[in-house]
Length: 226
Image (cartoon, rainbow, N blue to C red; front, side, top):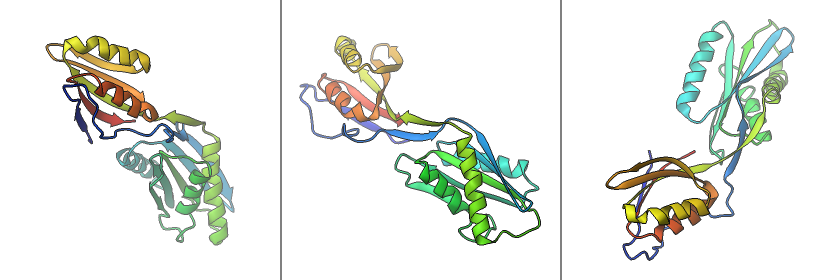
């Protein structure tokens, strides 16, 4: 897990390391709300599309293993997935179909709907008649499209989660910043050395961290981004 460890100067004067996103940067993404299915038939072949929202490759591997087990009698299990707001992490798989006729059309539907953090698997039961390259591309595209259409597209706001460490006399200043930015408190431990967990919209994190830096002798740790 990536972590940032910062310590504001004892004088309370800010230093110049930049954290977080600039205010004008996008901090939302579009994905699907839950699991859905789609079905497309052509010349006896059935194309069953299965879509899930996903956050990491471990979940994707788990889902793929489950699908292959459940649909073990199917001829092909083709898929595409995209992770991350910038859609830079993705993969397509034709699973024995002619190159570019299955995974790529599924991936194309994900991109055309501007989605990320999504996995779509299309399971094919062969009907005995070959569809040709055009027929396959259309079938996998239509099945994926149906799975998306049968779901709900949602917009999620990305948030950063931080932990503060500070001495009790700084409590009032800490809570003032929390209230000013309407930060969501996620946890706390007010012992000899206080700690407080909070989350903030990613695009506001730069301003919030800058404000906390103005409080003397405070440690700020980035826990994760969601």
